[in-house]
Amino acid sequence: MNIVGIIAEYNPFHNGHLYHLKQCKKLAEAEACVVVMSGNFTQRGEPAVFDKWTRSRLAVQCGADLVLELPFAYAVNSAEAFARGGVGILDRLGCVTHIGFGAEHGSLPEMERLAGFLAEETAEFRECFKEFLAEGYSYARARERSVEACLGPDFANLSKTPNNILALEYLKQLKNQKSNIKPIIVNRKGTGYFDARPAGNIASASAIRHTLTAEERKNCVPPQVEEAFACRREVKGYFELIRSLVLRSSSEELSQILSVGEGLENRMKSQVRICRSLEEFVEGIATKRYPKTRIRRILCQMLMGLSSFEDCFYARVLAAGEKGKQVIRQIKKQGQIPVFTNINKEASLPEILKYDILAGDIYNILTGMELYRHCDYVTRPYMEKA
Image 1: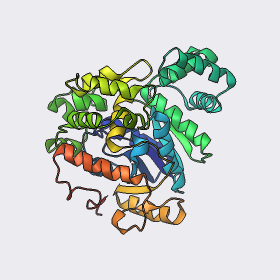
Image 2: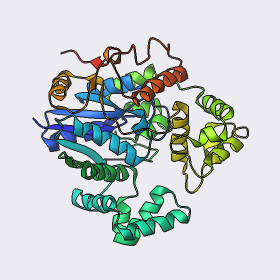
Image 3: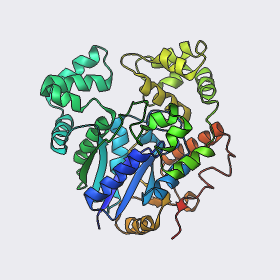
C-alpha cells in the first residue's frame, strides 16, 4: 500500500496543516500517513507551544496515522540537518512510498532542478558562495545570491521563502541518500509564513502563537487544538536558564557548542550581563553572518549540551491511530532502523536519544510540569482506541 511521509513541527497543528495532510494523502493515493515531528523544541530554537506528546496526539486526532519523533540533534539545527534527519528516518522505515511537503511557489520539476544544482555544488557555485560568505552574508543569503549569479533571479526566488528552503533540502536529501521515495509538493494555501493576520480560516502557526485573539484562533485550528489551548501551560524562566548557563560556562566551553564559531562565544559573555530579555540577548549576539534564528538555535543547543553528533536514525513512536499500529508492525518487519515505543525496555539506546530525553525534562521544568510523572521514561505514546 502507499504510505506518505510528512516532516513537520505542528507548532501548533492548524487548518493549513489539515489541508496539507489531506492533499498529501490524496495526491499519493495513500492509505496511511507517517509524520516525523520535532520534539519539545523547534527548528527556530524555541520551546514548542505544547509538549511533543500533546502535539503528536493532536496530529493523530486530526488525521495523521503515526507520529515519530525527529531527534533533537536534527530538529534544532539547520534546514539541511533538519531535512537529513527527517528523510533519513522516513527512508529507513522501509514502507514509505511518498513524501509530501509544502512550498510557497514553484513546480516540482523546477524545484528538483534547483535541488540537483545545489546538491552538485559546481565549481562556479562554490566560488560564488565562498565570495559571498567572505563579504559577511549568512549561509542562507550567500546561497541565494550564488544561485542568482549562476542560474538567474527566477531560481533565486525559489530559494528565499521558508517552506521552499525546506522543500529544496528534502529534495537534496532524497538525492543524496539515494532514496526511492517519490516527492509531492503542495503549494501553501492562504497566508504566508510570516503573515500576522489570518486569511479566512487559515493562519500561520506564528500568528496563532503570537498575534491572534482567542476568538480568531478558534476559527483557524481544529476543535481538539483549541481545547488544548484552554489548558496550555506557559513557558517561564527560559531566558534565566540560558543566562545562568552562559554565566557559569567559560568561553572555551561555549565555543564547543555545535553551531558556535567565529568568536560568537565572546559575544555571549559580553552581552549576558547587559541584556534584560531573551530578545535583547539574541539581538546583541546576532550578526550579518549569524542571524537571530541561528542564534536561538545555538542557545537551545547550549541548553542541551549538544556539541557534536553522528548520524543515527530510529523510529521513536509518539502517537498512533489504528492504521498507525499496522504501520508499526510493517516497519518492524521491513524497516532498517529500531522502533522504540517504551525506552525502558531497551537494552541499549542510541547516544543522541539522550538529548530528546533531556529536552523533555527541561521543557517540563519550564512549564512547571511534575518532572518524574511527565518524563520520557514514564510517559507512553498515545495509542488511539478503535
